[in-house]
Length: 190
Length: 190
DNA sequence: TTGAAATTAAGATGATCATCTTATATTATA
DNA sequence: TATAATATAAGATGATCATCTTAATTTCAA
View 1 (cartoon, rainbow over the protein chains, first blue to last red):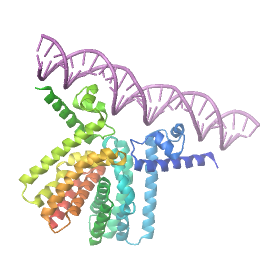
View 2: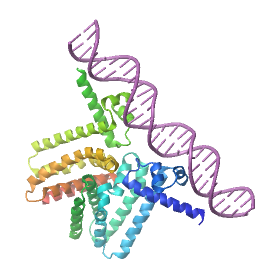
View 3: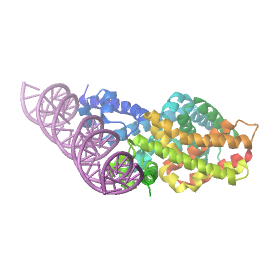
View 4: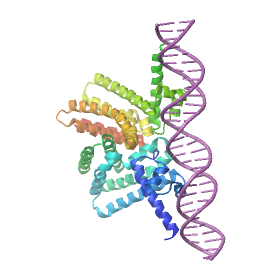
């Protein structure tokens, strides 16, 4: 294998390990040593692949955005109606409920952490949020053409972020179940 | 003035300064030096008043809980109906909208930060959340006796946390206005 | 095959941090 | 007023951290 390719593979290993670490811990509590251990890369070598910690964050967010876009375009291809796509979106926290009660929403918690004092990093992290938002606006536009799709999309995000946040604080999976059901009812009532 | 009283005053100065710092920054990014600067207490003297950083957090949360209880019992005394009290609660983010878009919900962001890897501290911070939750359960019990007050209280918290989180991420006050209106409509429809 | 480029790896550097120690100053009270 | 308790303040301590330097090793292309 060519070295160039091998390097790309190593970068991906680092990114994947950091992705999980970032979700389970936090950006500011996660050290290069943690990343080195998690990805089984010698500590001193990390700075060759990624000059700074911010660079790693950038790569992780790019990776996440790519994964999210892939998931959403899969849904677009396989799920026929916008209502069913929206229902599918609403169920994400339900499918991830074990993770949500332990670590919260990966997008929401990262944004909140970086939002306070690291505005440059917040802007990077916000990309993830925007991918969902734009997709939701598209779905609502198709689903209920007469209504304000932007407002509906934001409301969906509010309820999704809210239930993840409260379920995480209370460490209670039942909250996810109850609140996702309520979102489903709301969607069907539109 | 007696020295004992003076010391209590100094502690209060430290707690108030830390309260704001905690909201504007974050627990893990806030250093003793930051606290010293913000409260105008010599760096080396902080550890006399509070042995550890966790002790300061404990004192700040106790202070916040006290303020919250005071606010809620004021409402209980001055607002006649449970519906109007609930409406008053829903309006908190609206009254604080400048702060919310800049720093999020002070309770929610602290809980999220501490929830991931500092479970002992999370338990402390969660007290704030529980004060609101218990009060909300009481209000909903009085407001709609037939219904599941716990579930309604959680739903209220979900929407409140959700709108704060999304408004903070998007840095958009309009989201607060729109979503608070929606909560008001929901309350009146119960 | 050989020289250059890419990669690996360890350790150095310097900054920041929470906490602890110690010495001095102030205050209360007997 | 004397002395014990309380408070102040500076600096030491040791740990952790991101980033940088340097040298060794591997890979690639001429």
